[in-house]
Image 1 (cartoon, rainbow, N blue to C red):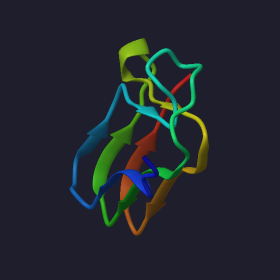
Image 2: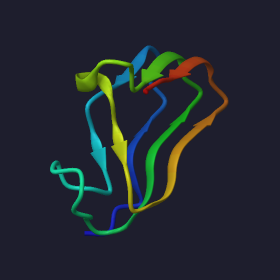
Image 3: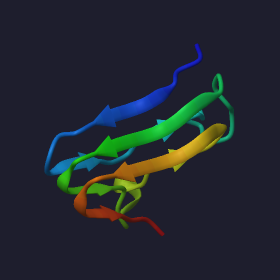
Image 4: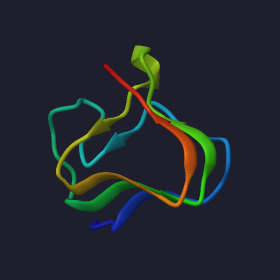
Length: 79
């Protein structure tokens, strides 16, 4: 499956935690190539990933990992 975007949203107070974009849950096997992992626009407040292991997102085999446009107070985290 070739997906253009994994998650696309314009919802405020958005939380995106614990996802695998472009890779299988084992973290090493690739899925079909995706265009973008996360694409959010016009969001007022939100988090993509965090510092805890369960909050981290894994991105691979993508053209673009994260796109944020026209939003404010969006935190992109991880270690």
